[in-house]
Length: 570
Ligand code: ZN
Image 1 (spheres, rainbow, N blue to C red):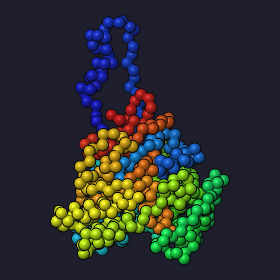
Image 2: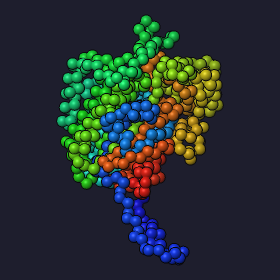
Image 3: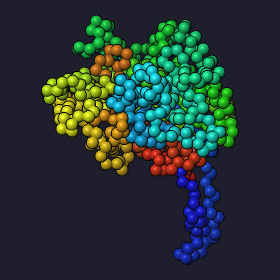
Image 4: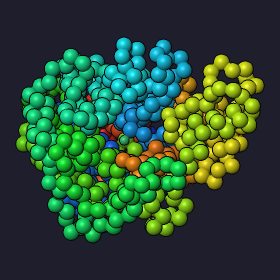
């Protein structure tokens, strides 16, 4: 944020007072200069940032007219329906890394949920985005959580540096969401461990808010939960679809998985069922609400930041797809629960501002997409995975050993073994590209060299080329040697009959577009349809609390939150 300069104020005064020779000609009654506009948002003492994991712009548009609680309230503030997680790898960790840093993954260093680091000192070369792999015993499956890979400060980090008494609190259903939005200096940070409780970094004592929530969850998991009541609106979406194992994958004797049913009861002890239900979000908001009062957030002149990661929508999307009664029930539950959350903040009578967005979008499972005029929708062939590609390439080039690795998925970053002679490296890349492009499911294969030399985008994110999107996900130390892009609506889960049927992560706009909703008491309603980026959120929030962020340090820009005269951006 730029401060007003004295020269600028003098120039503004000269213009207001008509202090030029030309303005002396027509004599009119002197008018009082217009009063300085009121600040558009009373300077908040609490910034509430909420991310709903996998809440696509498409879902917001589809359900917007049906919200009656917290999401309705936010829809009446400053609405950016076409926000972009502008980068290629639309996964949870990179997406959350953009929201409060103002920077794209190419700058945050968080290019994916997992990457391969051949130089890692441990034998497991797969690195989780929110771990410190140098800690003894940390592995990509059983990792030690850390923000060490986040290369830039968050809003909270910057705020605490400027005003050390400001507090930063982060609670989420996922560790990577809590960590990437909180940054390096949170006062409290808690995430659901997927099993039984909310936990934090090692050695952190649980405050009463977390103890109470964990006790309540324990009771719920012990007793099980009844099926949620489905409204007639959500019941109208019941449309069962079978997902069968595909040839050569999954258990052919297992009964087909059926999605599109009314959500059922959660059996005692079923932690995965709890995780893929609105109960997880409700517990997350229970902790946030109690910490708000226990820590007296927003109660003094040093602004505080409360971060909430609502993760259940992502698990619902992965498990059941996005267009059935399960997602409808989930979004209606979030809407209602956010309504009570905001009412609890209202009761504190503190000036606050809220932003809500998502880490990425998403879309439906291919079996249902095919029924809805997306005839090309399909599951990616297992032959596109790094391990199968490696076999084909080494066979074609008469090589012994393993040369191509990746995270296991049939798209995204692929890595060629380090230390090869350049001619051999190039031959492997060329053969891999040739084989991949023979598949009708592959849109493009981009080399690291092509990505790293892509021209910087000068247009809004909806107009970026594939190379520019990939460049926003590129980090020399962590990215692969080539990046595989599937055609749109090809789901990179070859066998959907397991736990997950649908996913996100692609370079296409259904995975890039997310809503960006700002609200504060007194917000008058404003909608800006142009394509903007989630990296614009941080500088916009910084403008509201008067925090100086040098423009060269981030990728985003402050967004005007009002339609008329006046601006929060200076
Ligand atoms: Zn996510």
